[in-house]
Image (cartoon, rainbow, N blue to C red; front, side):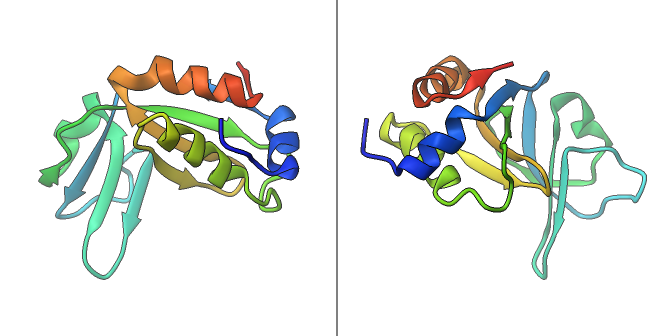
Length: 134
């Protein structure tokens, strides 16, 4: 395992993760209604991206979707906003094991997404860093 900062590892030791139910899809859509219920809706000048469960994909005005299915892992951080190196440590550990990771941060929690077929490896890596699994 690469050398990680003591701060990040201390923070991880006080944090936990939970694998969320369902399989998730990244989609580029034409529009999304205000009452649609998805994990993430992101709009920028070029596109609307939606991350949603596989069973909700049919409700979208789909332009394109990523071919892979993902599992969503919630990282419950003990001190959100002030955990220097926390995400870098998580991403580096996963990348060092050859896993691609997609990251979403919300106000009080960070999420990582890994391909469905790699979820056990990802969970083992998080445990080896010092996370507790819920």
